[in-house]
Amino acid sequence: MYKTLLFEQEGRIATLTLNRPDAMNAMDETMMEELAELLEDLKENKSIQVLIIKGEGRAFSAGGDIKAMLNDENPLDIDAAMDYLTRIALNLYTLPQITIASVHGAAAGLGFSMVLGCDIIIAEENSKLAMNFIGIGLIPDGGGHFFLKERVGIPKAKQLMWSGQLFNGKEAQKLGLVDEVAPDGAGHATAAAYAQKLIESPVAAMITSKEILHLSKIHDLQAILKGESKGQSAMRKTADHKEGIQAFVEKRKPTFKGE
Image 1 (tube, rainbow, N blue to C red):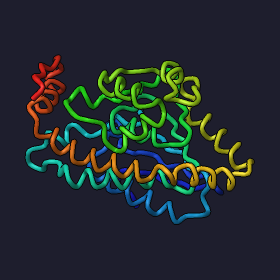
Image 2 (image 1 turned 135 degrees about the horizontal axis):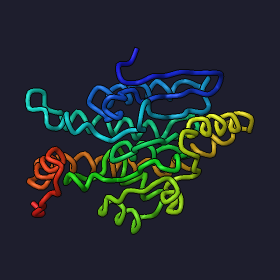
Image 3 (image 1 turned 180 degrees about the horizontal axis):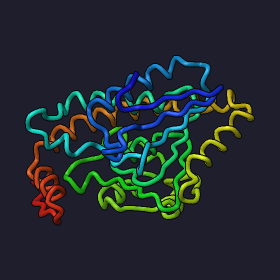
Image 4 (image 1 turned 120 degrees about the horizontal axis):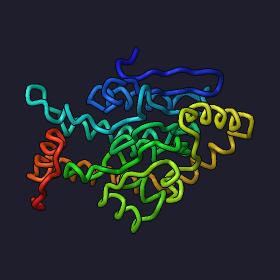
């Protein structure tokens, strides 16, 4: 049993639901650990050929749990967190299933990294997608650098990471960040229909093509994850990060100094 996830299998289709709705599915250390373990288990499960990933409640995921970052009594272990995120990104990228992200509400920061790691991305019209780590003086993690550049190329990836810009479903689709846009409220139904269509196709051939295409990129992903772990640990110690967090809590514009 998982504390922060729901997992259901129906035939060859499974659904993984991020389940911290009161926190907009923000990822705390428990969710990171459970995601790493679940995705590792899925790598050995040949009975599942399509995996839908979605969020419970009002959002896909608001990203990393900022409240956990501010908890002085039980502070976030950044090294342990980065280890979990490395495992999540590598396992997600190498899953022997076709993965579909079903996005409604916010998919921000770490939540957006996970969305971008999926093979197919379906977002509702008024979903809110952003690689917005920059707002609190951090860098993308969870493979965000890799997955974003795979989608849009390095020059555009830099612009999106540095701006932290927010996009709705249609805007994200124009940039190539999203494959299909669904009406508000119909995201999961659209993803389920897409999954059924895949199951009625020669999906074993699709999975094999995915494995071949991803095989040549694994070393690249591993190198980026190593860089993210080192870089994020360093960014967590900066004055800009502390100012970004404080400004977020106080609901004001941060004053960054590049330190």
